[in-house]
Each structure stands twice: as structure tokens, then as C-alpha cells.
Length: 298
Length: 267
Image 1 (cartoon, each protein chain N blue to C red):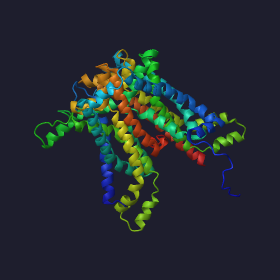
Image 2: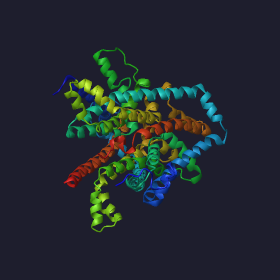
Image 3: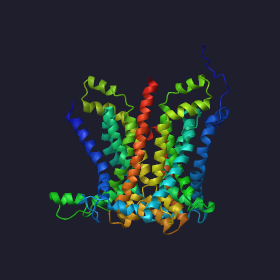
Image 4: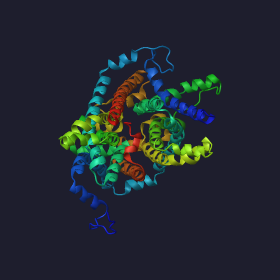
């Protein structure tokens, strides 16, 4: 076999054109893909494009100006971002150790733990927020405990504030966090940690210098995914938050169904869409889709 | 060789699991409460709230509507998602990144955006206030679950089995139908069940598409949560949970079959 320094075929057009012309030679892939692409186009892309059009059609840029200059809407935007940051950090702090334990557990223990982690993931959002309403209420279990122990004489206001919204959202997003982190951690070659230990590193040092850096891609992926998911929350802040914790989805809902101002609602939707789409583009560059949710079938 | 560090990590993980599961336990226990106010733990147990729920036509209608929408969503998601997963993992030459990004966007775009855009879009088509209209919209979020699972399933599948069938005279199509699909069936089932569950839990699109005339379970729960002070809601939510756990059991049984077949395949 001789190595030919020059390509034997004419240089092909780059990127999309090349990809399309190659599909043309073997159309089976496109044929299998077409129905799904068509469906997503008709029931997701076109409606979204229609919404973008609707946001400009009646009053031009006015709805956008109205949102970006109104202190109320800007405050909602800031609140939304704040809650998303708190939720993301909280999920990572609570989820990382669990994912680590899952990774080092024996297969049987791991299977049981995975079932426990996934179980709440199957329960309705509304159900899960509702249970926090029962637990955190004035006469709820937590307040009974606090007063029982004698930490406080009167019941504490645990509900309808930033605390309750964060707790509720963290609990809902934790399974997603753990599965995303776990799917990266399980791919780390554990012999590397053994190697570090053999060479004299303490378990803690081996974790810090070997395992933690190798798990960072999963942490970044989880960060993006959690943040994007948290951006769209509606039920939890509505049930567990007070007026101060109003998030963007609730505001869009009010604009659409109470004020019936569709251009304004669409414009707010477009702004939210811009944020989520740019985050997603970053995500899909670094993380493969089939690793999501730990490849749930496994 | 348990070090203090290992014990601390395990303890922390255990505490997080309790945090994760405790709220679920609370709702399930309260649904069996015998008194008509929300107290935890309930003074004594009874089935009265389940009788209340299942003797009310409003709740039964909500259940049936959710089942209809969810089943249609799961069916459509599977029919569209499985071929796409095959294309993604086998037949596509380039362009995977684009398809991945599109499927991901279909999954995590905030529900409120999907809801208002589909509402504005459905108005001229007359799809508002129809069950298929809602299922068509839910299918967009159901497809990703099928695709993610089937792509993962195909990655773990030994393609030599299919080649063996082809060598023995089966057409490629028949080999996929007779050998590959049965072997990756668990992944397909998991995807379909997830597609069903996301439809059953979806609130905003359902509110916009169905209006206030017909109420699936999620909408009924949502309205109930804001007014109800008796445990009937806990009973209704626990019924949804039972539905979810039934789905989970299906998945686990399917998962067990995968492991068995994998062992068989590896010899």
C-alpha cells in the first residue's frame, strides 16, 4: 500500500452541501429520518416561526421595546435567572456525591439506587410541588418538628419564598442531574485512580486530581441542561413561590391568557427562546444526545 | 475498606435520596388519610378518598382523556422516532449534529413557548379543542425520548446477528424486522413509556389546546391544587403515581429481558 499525498478524488464541497450530496448516494438514511423531521417541522419549527412572526406583525418592535424597558419585566427576568442559578448550583452540590456513589457501587446496589433515583422522575411535577406545600406549610411536618425540638416558639414562614421555590425545583431536577453526571462518571477508567493511589496519593487527593477533572465534562453538560430546564419552570414557582418569585413562564402565561396581548406574549416567548437556543447550541457541541439521561435503557 | 471519607459520602448520598423520595411518601400516605384535612402523618388510614375520586365522572373522564392523548402520543412518537434512531446510528453520513440539536430543542424548549406557539398556529387549522391536536403537539416532546433510548439500544446491539440473518438469505429489511427489532424492543418500550408519561404530565400545552372544556388529569390536578384542602387530590395524584409505577415496572421487566438477551448474545 503506497501512501498517496494527494487526494485521488476531486475536493468535495464542505459542510452541508457535501453532507447532502453524500446522503443522495444512499438515500435510506434520509428516508428513515424524513417522517420525524417533517413532524418536528410542522408541529414545532413552523409554529415557533409563526410565533416569531406574530411578535413583529402587529406593532413591529414595540413589544420588544415594551419588555426591555419595563422595570417589571426586567425584574421577572432577573428573578428567573437568579432562581435558575440557585437551582443549578444546588442540584450539582446534592447530585454529584450521589452520582459518585452510584459509579463506585456494586452492580446490584447500583441497580437499586438507580431505581430510587428515577422513581420521583416519574411523578407529576404538580404532585411533587403539592407535597412540599403540605410539608412546608404553617402547620406542616417541618414546622411541627422545628417547634417540637424547640428551635422556634412560633411556626416559621417556610412557604411562598425563594427557599421553597428552590427546594421544590432542586427536588424536581435532581434525577436529571444525577443521571447526567452518572453517564459521564461511569465512563471514567477507574484504574487511573488506582494508579494514583499506588503512587502514594491519598484517596482524597486521587479524587481531586484524577476523578474530579475527568468528571468535569459531565458537570458542564449538567449545568447547561439544568439551567435550560429551570428556565421553563411554571408549576413550581406558581405553587411554592410568592409574588417576588414570579418566573418568566408565569408572566408569559398572564400576558397571553389574562391580558390577551399576543404580540407581547410572543415577543417575551422569543426572548426566552433566544436564551434557551443559544445555551442548547453550546450544549450540543460538547455533549452527545444519546448520552442524555444516562441512555435510560441501560 | 471503609474510610471516614467513604462513610461521609455514603451518608450524604443517603440524605439526598431521602430528600428526593420523602415528598413522594408524604403524598401517598396522605391519600390514605381517614380525615378530611391535610395532616401528616394521618391519624388513621382509609380508602375514602379513592372512593371519592373513582365515583366522580369528572375525574374518570380526566383519566380517560389523559389515557387517549398519552397512548396516541406514545404511538406516534414510536412510529416516527424508531426509524429516525436507525438513520442516526447507521445510515446517516454527516448531519447528525444538526438532527441531534433539533431533537434536543424539541425536548427542552420551555413548555410555555410550545404552548403559545402551537395555540396561535392551531387557530387557522381548526385543531384547537381536539384530542389529536393535543397528541400531535405532545408527540414533538415524546419523539426525543424514543430517539435517545433507541439510539442507546442500537449502540449496545451486536450487529453480527443481523448479518448472520442476511447471510442465511433474509433480506436486509426482514433481518431488521425479525432480529434487530425484537432484540432492541426493551429500548423502544422504555422510550414509548417515557413519551406517554411526559404527555400525561404536560400542563401548559394541554391548557391552551383544549381550553377549559375538556380537562386531562394534569389540568384537573392543577386546578385542584389551588383550591382543594382535602386529601382527594392526594388520592388523584397517587393514582397518577400508580400509573407511573406500572410504567416503571414494565420498563424494569423489559430491562431484565435485555440483560438476559445480552448474555445470550455474548455467549
